[in-house]
Length: 518
Image (cartoon, rainbow, N blue to C red; front, side):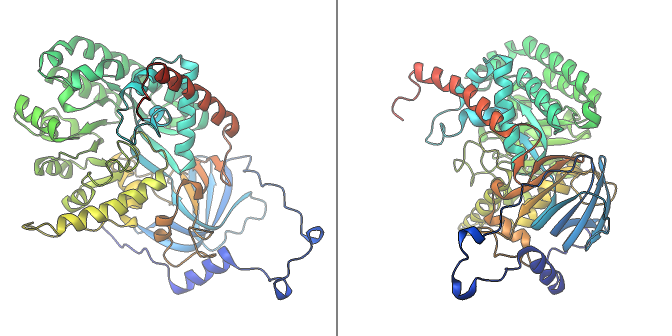
């Protein structure tokens, strides 16, 4: 990082934050509670502001100052329309302006996930953690009618919002799923960089899991047709909803494309102007295949077509070589580390988070597929990244400098301004005047996550938090989550309809005997 990195509250700030966020009221005499009929009535639930002109009052905030993040206590932020128009330590005096009370909470820029497959989360979650493949559930997902697919997309996008994730670099697993994602995102003011994966789910597996290259060669005409269809849809929605929807082109990976199809992908991405998003060096097999076919590493091969002349997000990179890291670093590409890729706990320690930090590339934390809890994924990235660094550093015969121990600062920075810079969006990922009003607040003072008050280093409290601790979420000034409840739609209805749709997939899996022996 460049510039000053001040992430600890001063003693004065800590005291102010504690008094604001967790002052304990008077205790009943001798510990005897007042009778029930003497208890004060619960106040009615507060409602979000009716307009995009309001103030957020938080007990701590990660603001942008002097070209660097700075943690402060007791902060007010004024939102007007799409933008942040004022940031102040202490309280802004504005008697007639609606206020959002974030007492006891840490105000952060809205999180940016550099790799999502939104609709595929809930249909696979809880089914694959014991070793089953996700292939069949997502094939059935693709076969649903649009209304049921939209119900599942809505459920998963609601989860992303619930955990503070306001921007999604979204690789939908087909054009059909990308269209569904955009329908939901447009209704709820979600900031999305969507694209339909090519080859999509219906064609992917025979090409990806081929035993020879005949399937890849034969796939070219259909892949070119898919690229054209995706590019036409992307152009039709590019810039929709006041710039919230900005599609990318999303090739599955280097080993499922030929030079002809990759050139077409990159040409379409240039025409859209928003960048490219792919799985990159996601395993040793991909690296071997690309090296055999084209004599280069995956990143080098993509570089030869100009893929890095635009915003670029590459996910997983478990097979990355030194050449791959060097290409990303040279061009400012973003590595999207997905600690719950393959299911919670299945691959958390296998992805090279500490190696990427050591290489000096831009590193973001992505959701991937099965977990939509962004805060939980930040925790997994740090905890599993530290374990990986310790194990690798302890290996006999290891050479070179010790790998760094990832910190919550690394994870939060990667989720905010680092990813925003990779998107070439200096108006995102920052709490600063002129930035887009993409914000979230997290309770860091309550039970299980805090100490009854906001502590002097509240970023560390995020190691004890999850999406359930997110209280408010705002994208471009639109309040989407208020006091822990979804307000852009009926939360109960979203949950019920999403559940009913996914049960149809499960019913078909049962009919096929998919659950036998597990």
